[in-house]
Image (cartoon, rainbow, N blue to C red; front, side):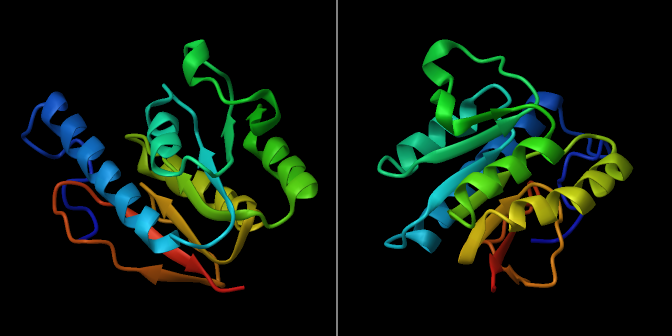
Length: 175
């Protein structure tokens, strides 16, 4: 995927609705790709950012036998989209993710982080401290999927199917 193409930075002449549809479609396609990438391999799923619960609900359909650990600052979803209490970590990621890593260790086969905003500087700063927190929870050979670039020395970039509408990123954790 070409960086900066159709990534919702406000420079497009498309409507907000069209951009939202593009983002959701590319995200759904990236998650389907990730499902195939981790098929047949043990491990939990991480959802970094519950938001409105749409992706969490989709992950439950894609990975019905897998536990999903969910992280967010707050819970603003209806009860049917609320993760089980022992799989929900509410609060600052800088506190909840290390606590989960202490409890579960490297446990995830897939981590999904959808944290992008319209402020690229904020997103880059968040990515810098978020990537190590995700890394501490992902098994070697696991996949990290995100709407923003993340960087770890032990992650290898993976090619997602090309889609110019929105940029999505994937990596394999090597160790």
